[in-house]
Amino acid sequence: MRSLLLAALAAGCGIAQSLEQAESGFLKSHPEVTALQEQWESSAEAAAAPVDWTVTRGLVVQRHLAGGGRFNGKRVIDVDLEHEEKVRFGLRSRFSISVWISPVALTGALVVRGKDMPNTAGYGLFLTDGRVQADLIHSWPDDAISVETEPAVQTNQWQNATMTYDGSATAAGIRIYLDGRALQLKVTANHLRGSFETSEELWIGGGNGPATHFRGRMRAMRIYTRVLSPVEAEIVATDTPVNSIARIPAASRTNGQAQKIRLYFLERGAPENIRDAWQKTVGTGEN
Image (cartoon, rainbow, N blue to C red; front, side, top):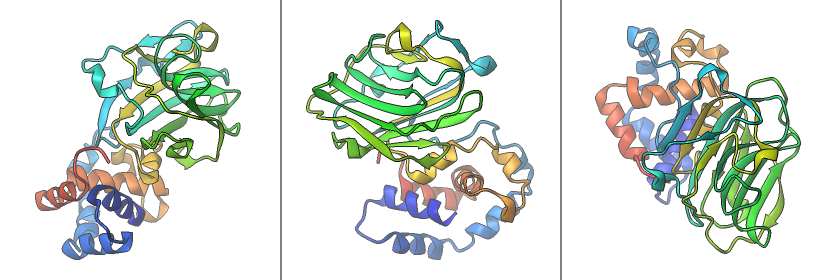
């Protein structure tokens, strides 16, 4: 819980002070937060918390795929976007993509914006021989960024893959998380000068040509117009519902579970004055 406060305050405030000072200032103003949360966790309101709640600030696209979202290498989803400009990211955009996957093949496109052809302009998150790969492409290979993890993905089990990009136009500006854990990245291209912005389709399970269409299951995909913090990446990878976490003794919760229920409480369960103070601290826009 401490790291959640630190990360959110630092990202939201944008002021020149240490993380410790930011946390101290909020808790000094609201020393009752922990006690109020403990009381709330035993309430009917906590028991009725939405099953699928996760990080929502900056969330612009969310798709829940019915029936476990089965993909056979032929099925792809062309996402129908009401406001496609919200995910028309470019060189200096800041964004995050998160997807739950259970692959049967360790190579496949996960979430891609661009033509359904290999190495075209756009951005995407992929599996490549069990590695999680992120590409930002203006023109391949001379004007692009591509990074990949070491082999980490397993077949036939649910895992969360999340990538973030900070708008720096460098490979160092990309992070990839698997199940909330930041992975070391190998840089395979790092020469991005032009924008990777495109008005082409947004694909789930495709976007890199038929040979790399995804095979397996997906159950949720989310896109944010901001960089998720490491703590938030851990929260989106925590699929235990808030109402179930409330029934777990605090000492027995995983870090992700503790972070998730604290954030939900600050956003939705706390008294109005606490919620308002929190929103003023973190803001509602991009970071």
